[in-house]
Image 1 (cartoon, rainbow, N blue to C red):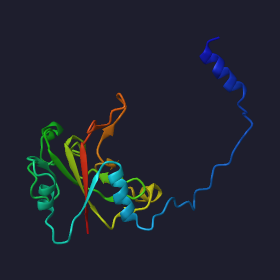
Image 2 (spheres, helix red, strand yellow; image 1 turned 90 degrees about the vertical axis):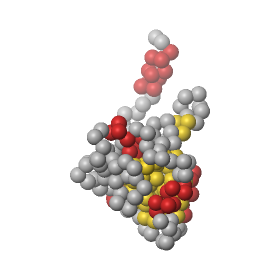
Image 3 (cartoon, rainbow, N blue to C red; image 1 turned 45 degrees about the horizontal axis):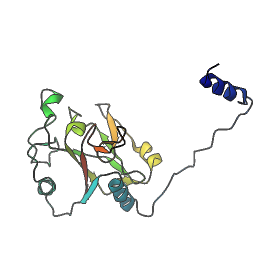
Image 4 (cartoon, rainbow, N blue to C red; image 1 turned 120 degrees about the vertical axis):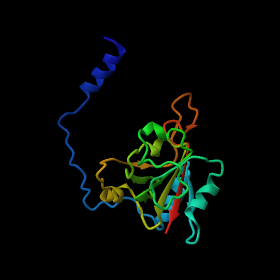
Length: 196
């Protein structure tokens, strides 16, 4: 008998199949709650490597984005308020036409204070803009922050595209030689712009 089989046989011998446990009651479970979900959201967004910018009421969103990314040449967005967009993900022929996008600008529906993630439903023909852009800007209303994932899942909705995702900070991985690599599978940087 191999060492692996020996170990597995010991586990099998010591499993008590007669034990049963009732499932926990979660109907009234609310999850973690914060005194100020907005402050917690900002802290968590920065903890996971993102940046947060609070837009003042009189600030022009296009000028703010240009200030944040002064070297960027190619901006992609289908949002009507984004006039600096040089590519529209609704009008390109193929997803690969968005390759080379410096800054993708999208809108989030709500943010989660517990982990800094944002619910992003697909609102454009080519959702690749969320992942192929070197940098991603997510516009999010300060009023749309929930405490935790339990609250978030109650708000999840899909539109006609049938696709959505949670995004939390930039793409990162440390699974190769334990070296942290930013932008491994998607944007190398994410800025959340909080609006009124």
